[in-house]
Image 1 (spheres, rainbow, N blue to C red):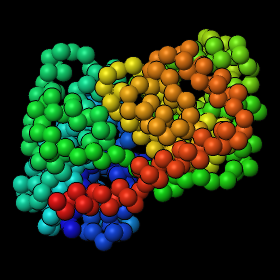
Image 2: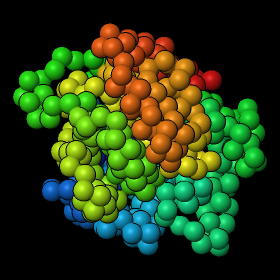
Image 3: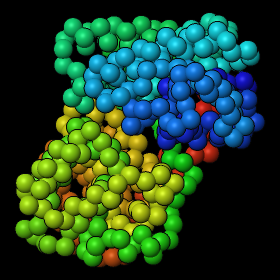
Length: 400
């Protein structure tokens, strides 16, 4: 098949769509990508890119068509809106200059959902069958993350989202819990297929790296990896740590990542007088398994929200693939996965007491029981989220 994948983000930006494109190519398909000029997460165009150059390049045998856009800058609400709209406009004009034929148009939509409009235009222009992969439920996810609360704006976004869903006959969703929401939005249930994330193949069980292991303090080391934002409810983690320290003192929270809420979080930790948080910075995804290997457990958290309870946080697949115990502070499908996998402990979202109890219970386990949780995690990943299985499933979906 000749597949055009549309994504606002692509290599050298670190998104899972990069690996998915390579996976489809390796299975013999002719893959091309329409994307923007890279500027995530720092909000500035990467070195070597400008408004006038790099209209087309190649990524490991994949044709990459670059569209201009206005960079996201400080990622304020207005700046993001401009960023999203500019990509839609410039990408549609970029399509007009692409010389080629495609059988399928696949829209990767973690955020923003506005890329769906580009897919609509591309499907008509190339006379190709369109597919939309929904990762966030707009406008609810935007509201829940603390970005927009204006009822008029949310209503406009809701109308826009419904119009996008209406066009696509094939909508993939990253969580089975998304289906009811889309049906309530007027989407025919027969158009909806559950298609989750998978973790890239480098997420696997690895031996400890002595150099990295020496960076870790002594004690019970729990890693939080990924975005530090409002949605991650870091205050819950801070309060849980305060409670846990009344039970045992050798707890360390290792933070690998960055985000818009990091400055506030660091200030709060300092105000609370806590000295067992270690912010190590951000690292390339392919390095993460070696950091995970030195952890006793991996932590995932989300704020209390109906929409977040329907979401599978992408880090869960990475954690499971690396065969480590998981401590979760979230509701809904994420907690269900941890419980079904028998790979750790879960407590309700924003329940700092419950999270503290999970950490204390984990600390009391025998070493062989901790190892068993990790084995269960990897086994569940292989059954439910393994890369090759899901790539084959996607091809089957395309061939319907």
